[in-house]
Length: 68
Image (tube, rainbow, N blue to C red):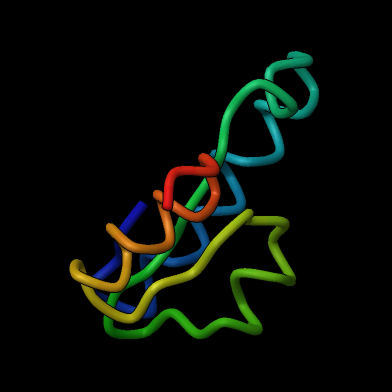
């Protein structure tokens, strides 16, 4: 997920929590990023990964999937 404004980053947790409740969270990797997002925020909401930009996101996705 990506957010461009601080007012929208709260919705990221609103996606992660319901996926946990539905029993789907273990089957997916969640990455977050965007201008207002920090690595600490990603950890706080339970995301699997954080990236500050698209090129780092691609590398992080490969890492999370075990593709190197």
